[in-house]
Amino acid sequence: MTRIFLTRHGETEGICAGRMEARLDSPLTTLGIKQGQSLALRLKEEELHSIYTSPSLRAAKTAEIIRGEREISLIKDEDLYEMDIGSWDGKTLDEIKRTDPIRFRTFREKPELYRREMEIGENFEDVQDRVSSFLTRIMNKHKNQTVLVVSHTAVLTLMMCQFKGKSIKHFWDPPMIQNASLSLIHVHNNEVSIELDADISHLQNIAII
Image (cartoon, rainbow, N blue to C red; front, top):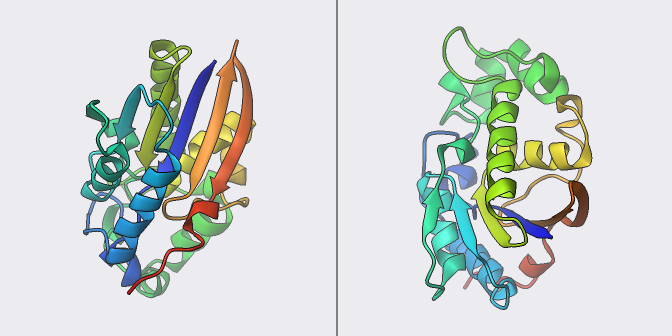
C-alpha cells in the first residue's frame, strides 16, 4: 500500500496582508513557522521515503521544517507550483473584485467555467492536468512507500478532488485546505481510501508569544 501525506505550506506575510499569492512568494510568518513545526511533530514517527515540494520558498521552507533530521532530499517538482493566476498575483481580494469582478465571481462560484486572461495564467483544467501527471508518477515510483507532498491550495484541492472522484465543479466544496492542514490517502491496487482530509487538529494549541 502506498501512503500519501498532503500538506499546505504555513502562513505567509502575503496571506496576513490579504494578498493572493501564486507564483509570487513571501516568507513564512512566525505563526507559519510554528505551523510547520507542529506538522513536524505530528509526523516525526513516520518513515517518509520521499518528500516532494513546490519550488516556491514558502512550500520548500515548510518541507524543510518537516524533514527535520531525516537524511532524505527535498524533491522540488514544478507540477506542484500554485495555480498561475496571472495579473491577480500579489493583489488583495478587494482589488481583484473591483478591477475584474466578473472573472473573479466565476473563479469563486463556477470554477469549471473560469478562463485565464488571454495568454497568461492557468485554468483549473491546466492545474488538474499537471496534478494528475504528478500523482501518476509518484504512485508508479513509490509503490508500498510513504510520501509527503507539500504544495498549495489549488493543487492540493484538485488532488483531493481526484482521489474523491469529483470534478472541478466541486473545487470549493468543504473542507477547505487551510495552512498546514494534513491529508492522508492510502492507495492499494488502484483503490483509494482517505484517512485524513484537511485535518488541522495538530494546530489547535499553537501560541504566538
